[in-house]
Length: 593
Image (cartoon, rainbow, N blue to C red):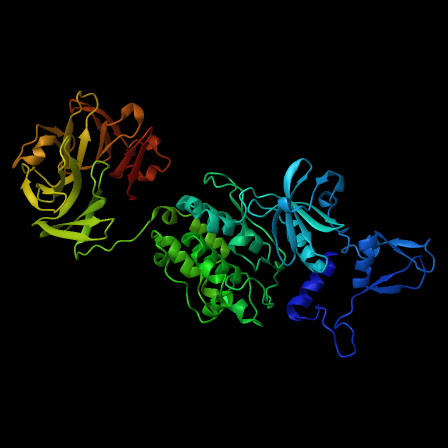
């Protein structure tokens, strides 16, 4: 049966129309498919048209000799593909365990091939796909070719297949199809869920391609959803393999698929194409997921116009036209998938890798800073500050500049701050006060205080003995009521501690200076622990050492990272630390030698 399927597939692809029920001048089919048989061994073979045998198979499992009704032969013996006798026995339908009613209340969907109903098989809810009588048996065989031999978490699972009537029993998707979600409940499609659906579909697509199968009909209607919980192991699966096809190295050429969801080489027709056509369709699917299916609404009216746009190399409108939040890496991936030249598109395996990357998950947008100076540092607004903004410190050897980027409105404000490079920033919000401050530490040792709203310089604190390398606004644990402090690390290994009110005073001196290192071991980073038992404790780095400060601002703990046993990569242990993160564990970043 599988050999016959393969021959039929080759003929469909390379001799389009030859298997159709067209009629030539003599009134006969273009191509006759005969089945040879004999009722007795040694008897001369007879032949019957495959279409006639299929009609008889609908009546029973035996072919009866009209001249001698006692002589019979099983249809499965002479044409196993007709009655699915060539399939593994474990997927043959056990009719006694199927509870199925073709009543309207159980209808899940229908189309040109037939209908899908909710049913029960072996005590579990399932979806039963019933094929219409006039539908070619090739569609059933085509789906079985994929479903019975390929198994993957992102492909709908086949449970059973039957021939009286022709049906497929598959796992049921409780949440329906993706196109239904886009049309009826788009609000539930969070960014995390958008990503997970796309990732699961890409995983299934790369698996199909690794098995040399072209899917050819990737669209929201053929993506089934099993849950809307984004942390679930299985969310989306690819369904409906009626036109999926094994692909030889040369490719295939039959123009299949749904208008508006096809690659340009498929829409043109009579052009050889390969799995890269699916990648183009995936790009459109990803676009529809991102825009909530807005393109699909237009496509329902004029689907062929979308094919024309694809043929002429025109891309869909930018996602911002549909009021979508920016997602730079996904938008770039969509453009790559929609390249007119198939060879310039990424493979499905590459698409999956990109969707699995941290850059795509984390990057929300790219913002160009309107400054010719190098960005040295930045600080973001805290929950206590109403303004949704980021402040960036720029600088050169003779100039320091501050830029404020309004993330809601997109505007930028830049002000020259000093004649020295800005090395670090911190945002200061005093308890009970509406005004917030930006403190900027400079290469010359100054700490500049400015209004966070307009960036106007108010004054400078007491100048420190070396470059200010890091700043931290912190609440020290154990104080009651809570008391906030400003800590400044310097290039000569010291930490200066200021009271929080110093931000409002000109030339305010530090209340304490802690000597930790020297000019060869600068204090490069100060941070707070996020671990519950050490919440708000201050940690820092000085050369190769990690230190923590007590509530009295004394060094209470030091860890020397030069100890080779601390690291699996001992060759890096002599390097200075560049930054740390403190949770239950201490995470250390170092430069390679």
